[in-house]
Amino acid sequence: MLNRPRICVFCGSSFGNSPAFRENAVRVGEALARRKIGLVYGGGRVGLMGVTADAALANGGEVIGVIPEVLSSAEIAHSGLTELHVVAGMHERKALMAMESDAFLTMPGGIGTYEEFFEILSWGGLGIHRKPIGLLNVEGYFDPLLALLEFGADSGFVRRRFLDPLLVSENAENLVADLLSYTPPTVSAPKLSIDEA
Image (cartoon, rainbow, N blue to C red; front, side):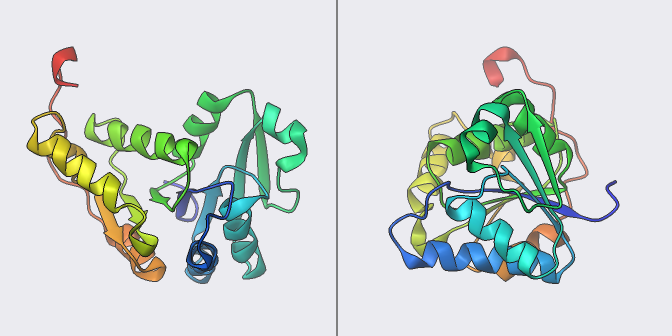
């Protein structure tokens, strides 16, 4: 167990086209700092990533960034973090972020955010971790994704246990609280054949 709880946040490196995305990124950073929860994220200073980190730092929070060398050298790394880990590539980035975190919170973002979310959701369903996963559904941003997951389950391709650790809220403070109070199922995920994965 880590010295203090930490939540990994996946989110966009841009702001999106609604002020609500930026406002909620600020709320997430503030909520984590207020509760003395460390923020683990992708290490950037741009977009929602930078806003979340800045809000946590401004409120005395611990912020751990993990960024691949290629992005760090492009001068988008945040220089004011509690810790900044520069790693070789994206695989190392995601592995370290997962290892350093007790829970995961996904805010609006693009392809990279989707990829991070789905990998951690998949790992949970396969029993690789037992940590909660949250979606901050700002202005219904994740409604199509949630509908896709339900459609996949109804169609027999997505196992319901993969969705068990998924917590959804439109409120940043409530989602952080839900992640902290989550208790994983006592039964571990069954071993899968390749066909079942």
